[in-house]
Length: 311
Image 1 (spheres, rainbow, N blue to C red):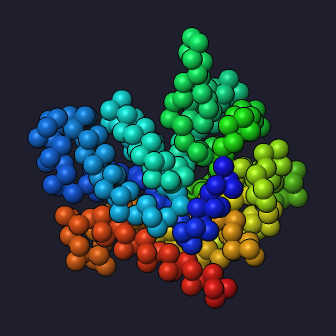
Image 2: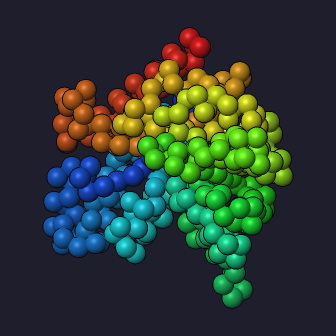
């Protein structure tokens, strides 16, 4: 699957993934009113508003980008109805030729990880049939229960030719409370470096072509750590959250990429899907929110391209 992602990146010239993380406050009033008129102010009404919002954005930007990253929590908040829309969103994005990275951050003891892996990346036996659950192309995985929580995902990735992105150094402000702790047994190196080394090791057992199907999540808000981790994980693609709304800029990202111009894909969520709320794109208004998202993608693409050219 990593090879297909690389093909999409080369085709679009955009190492960008758009986070489809809808909150009701991002959804224009006219879409909410229409959904509520049909389904009431209910979980189904909210979910239908999310679907309408997602579909219009996807239609507007799918030709510009290689991948999307729906965050499952934003759908789970609307219960079963939200999860149905998550599944519809995954299917629709695939129809558009997009790679889907399910931002699910799963990771548990072995048997539970096996079930998560099957539900999101593989298939489950139901009587005489094999049935697929959410069927994303990649998912995010939390490694902090150790190898027995990660290897079930790698097993399914090898069976299904899919991939994972393992949390290594996350973009949130308090990530350092644990991830930056120095490990005495490893010559006082930070924990995130140890995790990065494990990602490189796991990835050797799950290779695509040049790159592994086991990637890493490293926040754009920590460019110096990104420089170190890039060297520790030369064959791992790095998913880089934190661009835009969280403060990351194109100039912060150059160290996440290898010399071949590949090796990283940069995420922006509300900076794209809620672009119409920003002063920079206010001219589009709520009615043309999807056009504002397209303009924001083009601006992001330009920013990253210029940064890579000038590194």
